[in-house]
Image (cartoon, rainbow, N blue to C red; front, side, top):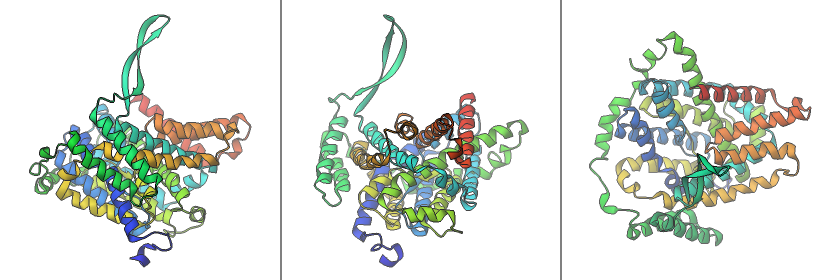
Length: 468
């Protein structure tokens, strides 16, 4: 095992990798229940999507661990599943089968741009200051996810007085009400995990998750008596999976997707929208978490320019991410992507694919024990995300904030990730303002042709979303 995963070379151990895998799994296990709840609104069977989510996560994460040997986990992406449901199905009127067909095509496109090095050319075109901004931005994003899950912020609609009169409403974030046991639990978990991390206790993040979950039981946040083993049985899930498996290719899916010639441009642009979000979520996660920890070394990134086939870890990781989307669509779920919550496991010491294998095994076991896993509350994993986000903010120190040419694009790339709740939108804002600043300074030649193309696609995507 040491030889296969190169544990000594990566300065890690089997026990560290296992702890990291368990930590990553619990940090992202919410997707097992959130993804079905979102996609089932389209008419897809809940248990079928639940099992499809598990299968896609297992396959994608195993490829990432065994083929690329990196500690990243994959699962159907948040945001992408909402786009699938609320925009493609509800907004545009496509069937869920047709939406799955689009996701499958998106996966093929991602495989194509990976094999042809387009993805790698994009990575090489990103200026170093922007790479640091993306790393720090993902720290903000991850911490914000944790704060939101902990319910430490309360988003309320408040009247906004204008010239002495109320003529509009605005959503204003405020500190949560501490008479809520969930918030109190999150604070207990945050204090506990912070103390463990500061004291360098081994497995501190995982210990924090487990202990906080146990504390949640007497506090009433977790109701053990509500565990339902019968409804969420594996047999029931397998039976319902027959409805979604291969549905992307049936009469209501691929066979009817291009039957209306007038809708073909809309179909193609929707697929591109899927692909852009998927691609930049992944690239952002790899750059943001891989460089500082040494998972992807500087030499590994530079080797992308001259490498052939899949000779580097980045090559293999990008391919693993690309192929997982099409696999997920076959079983019946939206885009499968690399999870930023992998940062929790990386923060716990995960450095190799063994971390990913552990995550995949836990996803497999979750098909049998899903009701038990469901009792881990969001408030138990929130502290892990918050603290990992804090650690990732160190990337900001490498940005020259007194130089506005660097500071303005870095601000939009990093801060927008949290404010827009999207890694890809943050990157889009950063790229666009990077080009704006360079043109304003007469340095447009410093902007890579790849970035001009990417910016054009981002802007086109925003226009399409506005029209839709």
